[in-house]
Image (tube, rainbow, N blue to C red):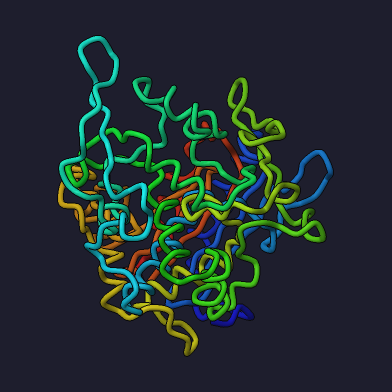
Length: 399
């Protein structure tokens, strides 16, 4: 998938609307900067870097800037699980307790009338499929009736933002073994609950493959696809490529986020021991678009196949019924799916995507033969740039 020249272009007057939109957010200081990329038929038809990767240092944003992609890691880890399903090492409906002992018997914390918790046994084992669709009943431990229990084990809000593990001095499987001893918030298979599901899957990858998650991802996904800038941590030599994290502050202005787990994170200087399948990767717009283009094409790109088309089909179609949404959104084995036109802006039925806590977002729309990526670094992100950017891309399509 070459990047020298686009095979086609968006109508100039309509592409200019995307330019103006992105620049407007920078000029109003709502964001520091962004990288936007649109592929059609695998070719870039729009690519733009605006603003700053580090405003204080005077470092401009470039198309090669690195970003913390947080929950966009989930799709990559889900693809790793599907590769192991194809290898025969993991079963879609297999209990996760076959890989992580503490999950053989799990508990659910039901709220009592006084706001406390009543512990009951899970009615069924948690399965790989439930983790892939976030229907295992597992949250990030923020709920008041379980938060103190999670905090005592170094999980939940006590661990940065709950999902954050880059500062941990232990491998991810040690953290997940401890998670299995804590109560969850819904019975397995009965509700959509967003949480540690994909971090658990990252541990399953390690147990089933016999190698660390970063090594498996590199050998089976990022390496074969030539994604040289996608990894769990950033080397000291490349630290200036990593965009600074900003936060929406007073009056909607972007301000530099603090150091530590709720801000800049430990992606350069830190223990570098915990590979979070749910939230740990860093990447570039171009790299992540390569992964998405491989998925759009049924698991192969530039003569390299990472998954078969049927496995990709399970990832990109609704596998959770109406548990995720009753308004036309579904959740497959790795992606949110669009099942009704209008359920998510202008995205066609069959589109799929997700986003990350640092403000990044993406969408793949097979009917439009399109991959859309937006990279910013803003947490919390109080802007509406994600939805407006996607709308501006769709308005530029006139075929």
